[in-house]
Image (cartoon, rainbow, N blue to C red; front, side, top):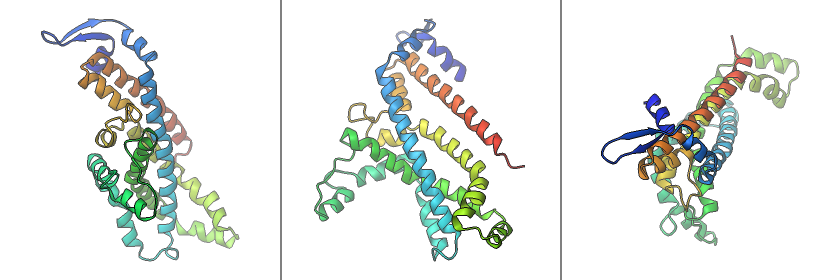
Length: 266
């Protein structure tokens, strides 16, 4: 399938009278280079990944630290279960849940705003709010994964290290800066890599919530490839968009694995 997709990206395809491929060398890649819609999809995708993954990591780290301390929050077992529940839903189910919540006239989110004297918001029908609504949903859905892994990593740190730091007079900030965070770096890099890869491929939530609209204001690279290849039947150009995403993923993975190798724990 990969080799067939790669060949498609260097071809022109006709579906009339059966599948016919004509080699056009770099035609599709040249078209991609000057495609403004592609750059719009790339911008949307990078915005979702950049903001979404950053907030997911920060929230997951804060929640993991809070839930790791017995003296800060009581009933930690309950909150652990509560925090990981969103992760158990499929992306399509998450999209449908939030589409109902964000409904302009019947959604509970706008109902709450009206009760506080605020005007209802067209969350998915406005080009400005739609993209940030998707980011918010992605944060809600995947922060539990970051929280769960970092909490497990925190609980794996030997208590003797903290006891020695307390004897030396280390503050809470000092323990976080010189003990906790450095020991979490390998796990953090791996988590961020996984989330970046998944974020760059996002399509399901967007398709269910906005279908890339209004207009193309929330269209991601994967959704654009789908629209071109399987809706407009331009299979060659859809394959080209997919291969371009693969190239980006490879570059990002190489960079992240290089960083991870610098902090590898023996």
